[in-house]
Amino acid sequence: MSGELIEIKGEMTLISVLRLASAEIELIRQGVQNKRDSVPQLFANSPLVVDCSQLGDGCAALDMVRLRATILDLGFIPVGIRNITDTCVEAAIQAGWAVLRAGRATGASVRVERSVSEEKADADVPTTVMTSVKVIDRPLRSGQQVYFPEGSLVILQHTSAGSEILAGGSVHVYGSLRGRVLAGIGGDTSARIFCQKLEAELVAIAGHYRLLDDIDTNLKGSPAMVWLEGEKLKIAPMF
Image 1: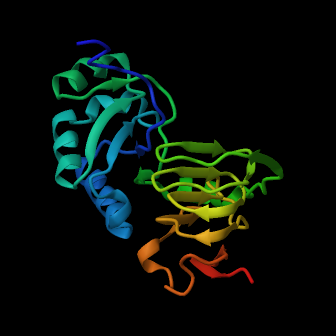
Image 2 (image 1 turned 180 degrees about the vertical axis):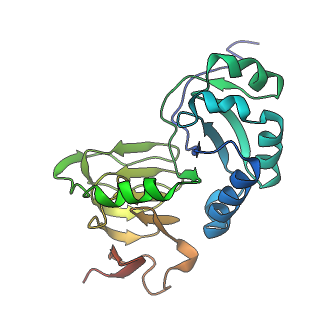
């Protein structure tokens, strides 16, 4: 028998990140459940990375066993935990967690528990409108991701089911748009999505989602534009 039987290699994987601002398990449960229930098709059986960068030394108060059990109970797959202090590493390992290096996991972000002062601070920061443009002149295959937080993305060909596009500004696809596309990922509510043929499983602008099943059947497979009007995502024919 020739050839390698086992191969291990790194890949771009679409993973949601749970960013903790509290070590209270019940607060975490409620926050994750609310986020899950808002877009159940997106988060069902979704892999999840827990990020403790905001907890700092407060991660010592985090019950690692209960946290993992809670995430499983809510229908997520706990992949690992990151940004914990050295004193918390052993407890995480004993609870069955993989301790990850600090980095960027891709996909939707779930943030738990924010204070009134934090919300006000965010409200006082003006949104930056992205002006840079990145052009992709090849098809986007299943499992591939394009991430460009600095501005808008232009895809000159089609995107495949299972692909993902994340842009700080708008997204233009001059072909069939499949997979997931998230525009305005830094909070730019003026971002838009344009495509020649709308077949995406999910479209999002500044954190507001619509799923393919929620889209008017007359728009599926047609040239379309997606934009944010207040708190509601709008989709309309482009011509």
